Image 1 (spheres, rainbow, N blue to C red):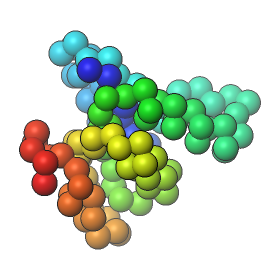
Image 2: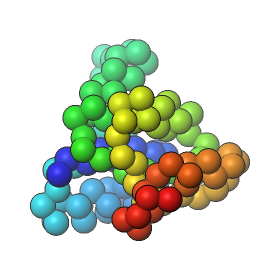
Image 3: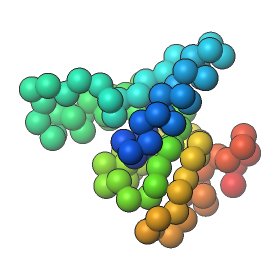
Length: 109
């Protein structure tokens, strides 16, 4: 299975740990938030993230509900009809709308 991890860059270590755990279990994982975007403008970065979301079988989210980029990526995941799994969700400012549509602990909520 191919998985793309999206979320708040402030959780870099948590995201890297999740990626390592998935890879140790045989998954192919993309973590585009920390890829090299040298020479890319904002629109190109959005296209790059879209391609990583499109490539994946499932999207994993590690998020504090404040990152606007993550909201944008979730919109793309929704538009591309990708299953979304909440790995970590720290409710800071937005209502917990995501839990209505995502998978938590392997079950659709």
